[in-house]
Image 1 (cartoon, helix red, strand yellow):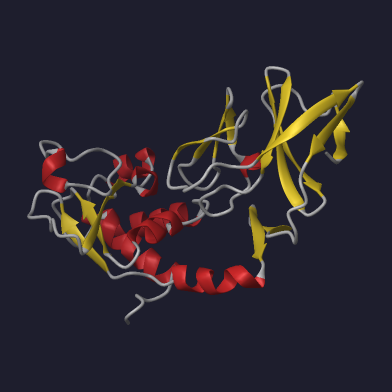
Image 2 (tube, helix red, strand yellow):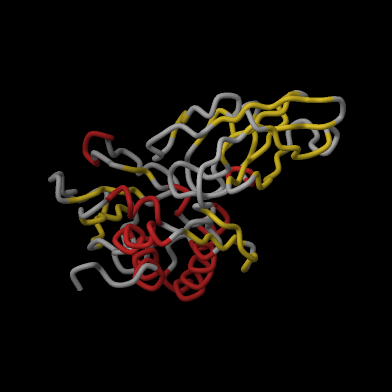
Length: 260
């Protein structure tokens, strides 16, 4: 084992976390009820900094998407990640905290300067080709929850309402995902109240809310793969609803569809 001093024992209060660099590895430290744990800082989904996530007991939630990780073991509990997170040994020597991190080669995620509250993530050359492929946007279509919703495997069905459409069964929608976190906030939804006279202001305010969501719509795009993303909404008005704005935002921030 190769132990590296990372902090004093009193630097990290219970319920808090911090990021440290150990050699070429970015490590997240968590204090759970007075015991310090160390795991890899990169979320197994898209590399978001777990040290900036919300810690609830021994479970940290990814600050970007819906991944949850047990910080005591590195075990992936929920979300679109595909693997557990590396967990590192900790020892306390007097007032000093030490961590043992095996040499992992060149650093795959580098923390850059903060831009608009978001960290800049730099990946190695080996990752860039895959990232470019993932950045391609599938086709996007809209469907009202009360109408016929395509059930074929060509579509990735995403409900974008914050509330479940009244009277519609789960079997009818056959969802792949309920992305309620991308729906308008409750305050904005209540203010709009599907009033066409408020559409222009609603659109601007909703676009601003979407800009403030960490990670954007990336996880949905990745999970959809090559399937057409079907944005499902419950509003009666087919021209004035959040799915129309969300599609506009996606085309602006994630580029035109791959086949466009």
